[in-house]
Length: 156
Image (tube, rainbow, N blue to C red; front, side, top):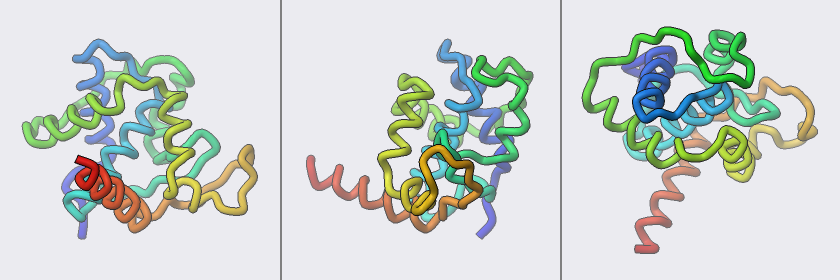
């Protein structure tokens, strides 16, 4: 099944929503918010938000295309003009992801993804400081976050 949106549309919308909240967003943080947006929609809706894969880089999950687009900002907030999607449902979903994860720093988000199975499984056998283009499978993301959601429901 093909996704409705491009990764650039989702990235632009996350950047805009973060700006509206007064929270500057770096490329590193954007990558992690994209990851969690994709992971939770896979777990809950059983389909991807966008088609591009994440790679298990040293600093966590990354969509290389988006990384290259904002590479010039390095560790600084992204100030590029963006074209967010004008879809209330999507904006509401992404705002929820930002509400859950956006208060964490990029480094905290990196650490969080490093503790989770999809990233760890993709990096199996790769030294922690070695570059990698290993893909984090959507299947592993879906099953891991679906199980997290189930455990959270059971804990209530």
